[in-house]
Image (cartoon, rainbow, N blue to C red; front, side, top):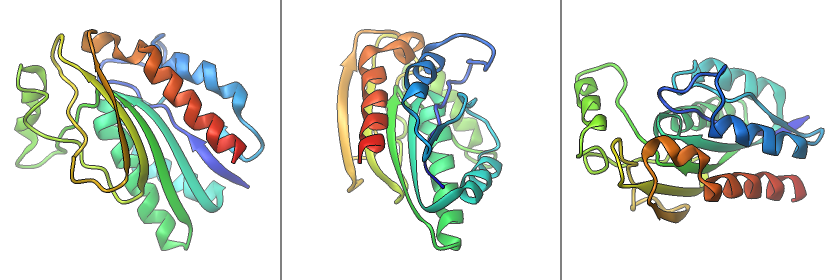
Length: 198
């Protein structure tokens, strides 16, 4: 049975048919997969996460590890939605779930509802300060980094989170280049290798 799922998450303007840093990560780590580990194609930030979570839970054994190298909206929104949904569905059928996340310049947002208009702040100079990224209980490890060269700015992971959170630093790169950051790629590969070898 598969117990490890690598799911790269793309940013707001990225498309599956275009080259980018997240797609490069997919090429770099897919050769590390084993019979109990699979890597999915890069997912757009607004993927149907509930549907994907159902597929993951159905295909997995008793334990599920998500490895989520993600960028921008794919990090601050997509990765959080997927890990939460897999956690909920997995728990409902007695499966243990954990997620390891490598987040490059994560940008969060609100879903449709009364707070949805606040998402417009993501493209302003306040984008990195008006909210934080709140990790859910199934995220047991998180590495993240950000930049302040050009909005949108990455938003910090909630400091109240009690899991293993590592701040990778602030880089002199625009948001559009953060998915190409070598530190981000190295951390994604390190998580995959650790999961393979444990």
